[in-house]
Amino acid sequence: MADLGKKYCVNCLADVTNLRLRCTECPDIELCPECFSAGAEIGNHRRWHGYQQVDGGRFSLWGTEAEGGWTSREEQSLLDAIEQYGFGNWEDMADHVGASRTPQEVMEHYVTMYIHGNLGKACIPDSIPNRVTDHTCPSGGPLSPSLTTPLPPLDISLVEQQQLGYMPLRDDYEIEYDQDAEKLISGLCVNYDDEDVEIEMKRAHVDMYVRKLRERQRRKNIARDYNLVPSFLGRDKKDKEKDKTGIKITKEEKEQRVRLRALCQFMAHREFEEFFENMHKERVLRAKVRELQRYHRNGITRLEESAEYEAARHKREKRKENKSVVTSKRGKEGKDGEFAAIENLTGFELLSDREKVLCNSLNLSPARYLTVKTIIIKDHLQKRQGIPAKSRMPSYLDKVLKKRILTFLTESGWISRDTS
Image 1 (cartoon, one colour):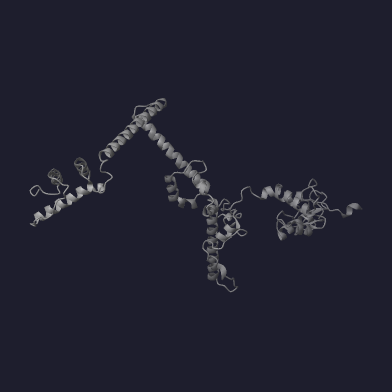
Image 2: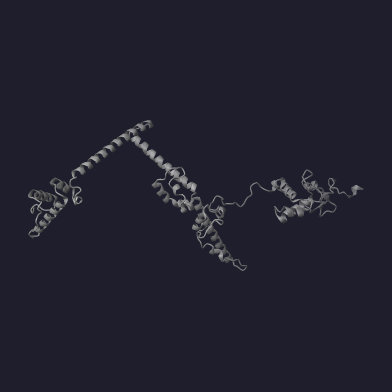
């Protein structure tokens, strides 16, 4: 009597009480899943006929070895829930499956069987075509989301904050770059009756505003990276004289930094310092190459000989320097001693070198010589114009001195020979 309620496959006579497939066109044709999948045909029944699944909802899709004992009805409810609520909403999916399943059980069963199981491996390819690629970079590139991420507040005092107009909690300044950028979106509003042209125009305004925000943040990042705020406040005056390697910065390097300052917006501070360090190494190498070329021109082919050559060259230069110093001292002493009698008198700085020699040889003061020179030249000009000379010579001027001065002025070209 217990077998009266059982159902059997019409092809293989297997027990199909829990699960059978009934033909919708042929009456009394019920097959087991194995015969149905093999395409069994009996009498007028054909494999392409329509079918209907008949089950009690108590069999397992994954077999008896599957964990949790999930029935077919629960599996169907799980697939309906994942389609209705979406992946990740495990609490709503557990309520849909039934009170006997917890959200943790629902998540573990779906991930194990439908994603990492054989079904997931067969349905989900290793490389998904046409997948959207994220081209943004988190390292500060042109499209980086980090450009709009606030930086840590500056470590400055309250007085310095007021001086800069800096708001540390917002990492903003009272006067920002492109201060009127917010006007692009301050009056925007979305209306239901907007036309497509108006919507695109508003999107363009938002896009322009986002670009301005990114540019503003980019400038803040550059100022923070290059430590420009402490430099403006005068904190790093001592650090400017030396770079990170401890090498003193020369005047040429400072000028070169100023000329290449425009590159700072394209290079990080670390890259900029490495660039200048490499340039310094290049100058050192060039100087070393020139030194080796000079050794080669002087016939030195080994580095051991260069030390002896440099020592000898240093001695020669030292001797030349000492000799020039001694010669200059002697010349200065002789020159000072030559005009010692008249160099402190009035008018000495007005005389030429030859006039100084003349006054020193005649034992004549510069002021008296200039007086006699003025009288003689004035009389010479009056005679050339036909005016009789009426000037009188000073009493200290005798004939010998007058003749010597006249001869000197004639040889120097102050007066002509015919009138002298």
